[in-house]
Length: 423
Ligand SMILES: Cc1cc2nc3c(=O)[nH]c(=O)nc-3n(C[C@H](O)[C@H](O)[C@H](O)COP(=O)(O)OP(=O)(O)OC[C@H]3O[C@@H](n4cnc5c(N)ncnc54)[C@H](O)[C@@H]3O)c2cc1C
Image 1 (tube, rainbow, N blue to C red):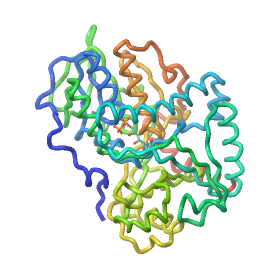
Image 2 (image 1 turned 180 degrees about the horizontal axis):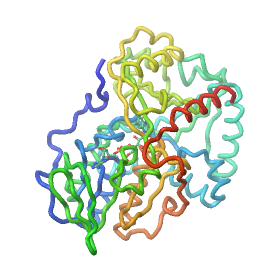
Image 3 (image 1 turned 90 degrees about the vertical axis):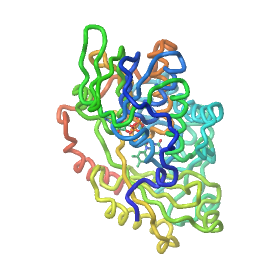
Image 4 (image 1 turned 135 degrees about the vertical axis):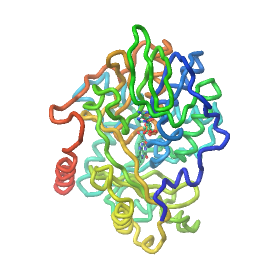
């Protein structure tokens, strides 16, 4: 069993990816982080004629953007009802629409830029883990239709076999808007596009300090410095104390995945007749799907920590997968890996600026489409193509007890497990 992501094993970073041999001396915008946020901002800015350097500590796309489940689903992490209550009807509509536009944006990029990443819009189904959750789904479905004009389909427990070859769920809510892709192919495709428009892709460029000059910044990496007019931090779940004011705004949470070896074609059809993306309705949810080459991919949060041993994670994930799909009990697992999500206390993504430095992060596990969208928005803001974004406008939530180390996560995990038990 390999402990590296299946996606990059299947599709390694292309040898012809045009990475820069040296750091450029001077650019309009230096972007720290080369995932969907950084690369989409770079794409927009470079296309608009700005000089851009994407500075990545490891290799291009190394972070969550090549490690995720590859599932693009409507909504953002914070439940829409809560968004409606917290920010009002107008913002609820704006954020909901942004989440749909984000999926359409992937569609558009794949089509217009020719990104070959196994993108398919087969929809998703949220699987009720309890009968009470299915009752909630009935209300959600109706509200989505009445308030937002968005059509979903309730799947009664007796009809679930048309959607999934498992008998452990209590119904579901299907949404045809969603899609799935191969994350590594997508992130390398975005990198090719950003480079095509002229962005400098710089690997092994760990940014260690940002120095403020009178009107510009000097961005110091371990291999030299770049002078930049603007700096964008796009490090999401890997945000450290590079800009100390950002650390209290976001904390890392580990997400873990296993994949099996490819399944026989008839078994694939039995387990996932419509090729949907799946997730369950608990706080400690599982997300799963078939990969484009017919493996079962099964993911979850385990215990929120970022340092669970990958073998132990595989043992736990395997147990939950076997519960849902007993017939996979003897199928070998080929890969187990992890990556870091970036969570905010209000479960909302944010675009902002501290001491002149821009940032965009906080996708809370929804970043495939939302980071694509927010990265594009922040690129447009910096290029002067738009004047504001709703993701800039909502207040951020910080807590007095968190400045550096997310010591509270084990307690939060207990709390959410208890909530799952009694819900
Ligand atoms: C296991 C897993 C499963 C997921 N599944 C899904 C899913 O199915 N659907 C979905 O919508 N979302 C999913 N997500 C979330 C999604 O992957 C992320 O929200 C998204 O990739 C974030 O993109 P990003 O560009 O903001 O950050 P990242 O892709 O994490 O990129 C940040 C980069 O910053 C670099 N960096 C950090 N500090 C520095 C520094 N000082 N100098 C230089 N570089 C630095 C890091 O090396 C990293 O490469 C999942 C995440 C994980 C980990």
